[in-house]
Image (cartoon, rainbow, N blue to C red; front, side):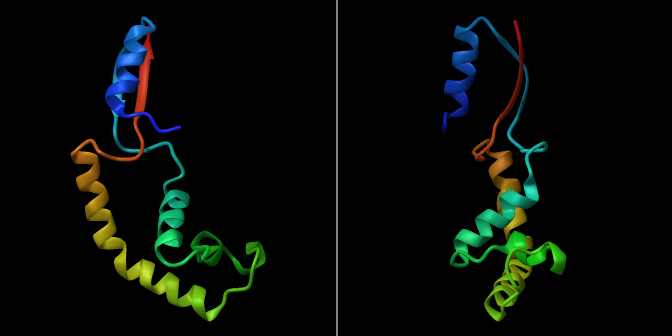
Length: 102
């Protein structure tokens, strides 16, 4: 479920909770998995997370298409990191982490 940060904070307040810490950076989320999911969507459904795993841990063999997608993801990662930093700075990221108390 996607809830805008302002709405989430308002609902917490309505419930009698006070936000003590709000972060727009998903420190505790599986960043690697999230990044791989995003790249996979952009690169046509290639499972990059599976591609970077050790050969014995892969669900599927590493194909030429996966190798090309992995190379593209590596080449584009610096630009993606800058965009992610801008997203966090603008407080417009896809994840909001809130610690709240009564």
